[in-house]
Amino acid sequence: MIIMSVDFGDSRTGLAVCGKSELMASPVGVISEKDFDKCIEKTAAAAKEHHAELIVVGYPKNMNNTIGERCEKCRLFAEKLKELTGCPVELWDERCTTVSAHNYMNVTNTRGKKRKAVVDAVAATIILESYLGFRKNKKSE
Image (cartoon, rainbow, N blue to C red; front, side, top):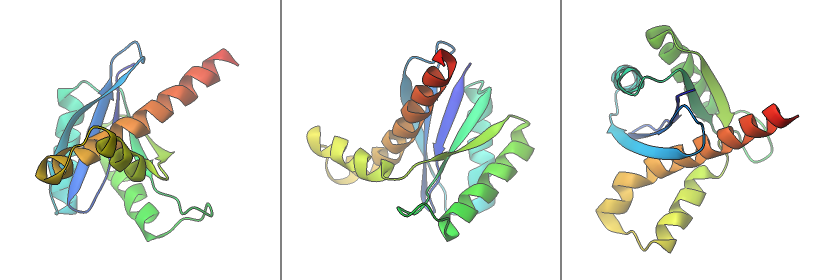
């Protein structure tokens, strides 16, 4: 199944996709858009372009497992994205993915504008890799 993941942000939204084999997630870009509705439209267009059959939206729970304002915004984003695409959309716990993405950027010594341009796509890739691991483990049970 082709799955697209979304790391939704107020200014930049990262996207990643895996192929039908569900073996590996790859970053596919960042949407630079501050307008909520336009961001959803651009994300829906990307989902169609990549033939996504399922969309996974990062759900940034607090470290104590509570749901805050950011989670509500991501939930609303996911609902509107589902309406616009007609594609199933799942929320996926994304705690610490942006921190992990920054750590990956440190390892590769990616700095400055280039880092800012790709960190959200890397975070989306981490979200999707986590989700794929869950699916793989669920199948083997």
